[in-house]
Length: 256
Image (cartoon, rainbow, N blue to C red; front, side):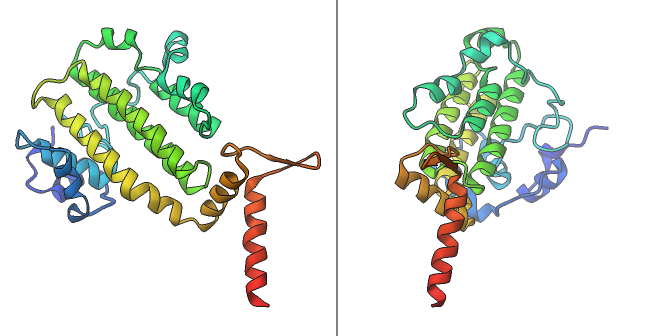
């Protein structure tokens, strides 16, 4: 029996129906949906609001069950070797003078490897594209939030790379996007998520972890890439250890 989550009258009821816990209230996020112009059809603004409240893209059509209940467990997130070598994130990691964490770069490249020209030509139905975009975005968002919270990537690098990921996914949606169709709505949700995360979520993740902030300060001051070790007198020392030492030093000094 199909559950008619789409007919739920409120955002709370919809998110409960599809089994997604809200991370933010509607009042906290509604302005971001409005800022990107999430309108034009009655379902577009609710789509953006629900995505913002969960801070993930949600693809639901017939089957409730998490962020992408209709997509199943596999939606093409195992790109071919050719696609992997041509990914946007892989190119970014090579060309950027201060690339972010190699682990995150590799993870993002693996996910976004599905969004090459060959894949765009192979798209034959709307659901396949929306599922791929939603799954790719959600997995990247998971990884980036963990990286920020643990001090593995500076805020500005995270925002820069997030923008490139957003552009790549929007380009994929453009192959099936028409005025006020589903791809149009998801493009608006994607843009709203970008604003909300870069202005609110990402800075809050960094500030919630004092050690993370210190690590970023140490790396920035020494001009080293995130996650890289520092060589002192032939010994390799992690910036995290230096950050811990700095915290302990100033804590002890403050007690004197």
